[in-house]
Length: 145
Length: 315
Length: 101
Image (cartoon, rainbow over the protein chains, first blue to last red):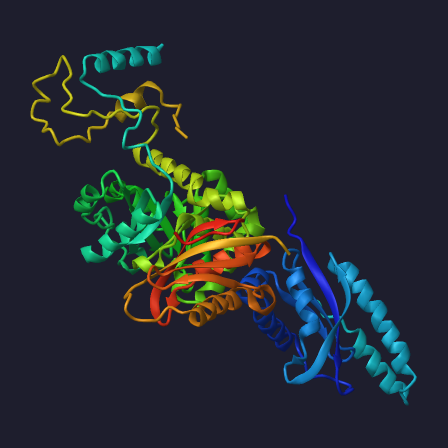
């Protein structure tokens, strides 16, 4: 039994104008990525990455996302990421945080990253209610897409 | 012992000049390069232009493709012949004798597994050299890989991208000696199909290292044909290695042809063909009415009785 | 960058009268195909048309050796030249300069 090798790329979306939320879901994100791969690597790149490609996780609040792709297609995606300036209709750039071979490793990294984000954000919150709300929204992990 | 006896009697026949064994017998010998999918066209002029182009590009063995949509036929009619007769292409064969070896191929489009039954009772299918399956649904695709009694799995180049073979079915198909076809002409005709084609080919690569792949054209007119080396070179975008790419227009096709022949003839260890009217010494008058042009006498049944378990494959 | 490959390509057109064969159109045709298949990153190469014989419909191009596969694929998958169905046939590839004979 040969394993199908995947790569999980954790990215952060950095908007040009700082906002709290981005109104980006995984659908718009994957559409944007595929469009850009076609632009820069042509139909060859698109055909190569398209099966196995999926946005596994996308958090609006912390602006992080996990992209899954096949091992072979990794370089096509990672080379396109720095060239993207427009996601959906938001001017933003990608920052690659981590590339892992299993989603567990990627998860660990994202959780660590989000804890850091919480530490920073908690100080600015006024009430305990808001704090709890934020905590819930940041740490929600809905991986079953 | 039986084998010895059989060989001895064969040798005797050969010595008497009644049977000619040819090493370069036309039946089994095929030469590279191969293109197993030339779409049939009623117009002889188009066909001729296509075939002339094929000769010029260096193809030696080609197959003219005929498709048949099984799902459109009403079920219920059992036992009757479902599949069409092969087109009459004898005149083309004669015209290109020595330059091209023309085979015939039937592509069966189907949805459900009922096709197996229709295939098992069909006599017309035997008249085709190659049988290809083109499944339309996922279930049919799995069936095509696992139990389909054909030689080749192909896909609809226009809307076939929804179907991706899964790993297990692919491996079973490889073990059964089925081949998978990638057509390149749709990609030339329409750039929208290119992505689907690449995607399907890459899927074969991820799921099973692109084993048993053949390239064929699927060309409708002669400007959709490309030379064999150019085709082999397409391996680069299809995720095959250079060697696999070359094999996809050469050795794999040969294997596919042999497999198809063995399916057509049953278990065969030796294939003997008379080069004239066969006159057996004890039944000479019975065979007298054979005409000179009746060259296609096949003696494979004799060999079948002698050695049912062995199969001779000439590579 | 001394590793170049030389391609000898022949163009077949359905109606030879239509469509003029000149350097600009050829460049455009090949670059368009390269870009659609390999995109802006993968399709970027210095293609140089060395010789063009409009009478014989043949031309020689020089490409970096790394791009041989890609350019060959791009050339093979060109289906139309000036809206006319066509066929680019690569007659020869070589690492040494070729000449139209």
